[in-house]
Image (tube, one colour):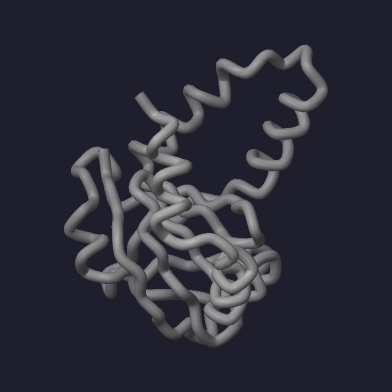
Length: 150
């Protein structure tokens, strides 16, 4: 399983390609085969899953009860925009135009490691997201979130 951390701001070239940071490339498991699945993420970012991690995500999704309308909706929203991409010889991946449009990504992209996936953000949108959610201290959020786990 590939796991990612850290954040980086990189340029997007005219063809919609970005370099994958070397730290993230080194975190790729051999099973990923340098292949990624992109889909629309929450808060208008793009989720980027390595091939091995996407297989795990698909297993979770396949267990949803397809007779429930909200589950069918989740499946449709997550699976309709799926695109596959592979690292090229210069360690770049292409972000399809509709994914860039969805996330508002233009000349720069914030690449955010989120453990099993990578999120791609418009850097200004990410700053706005953080400001919108800064009404609690870091300590409060960690205590509330991690304190609930067993």
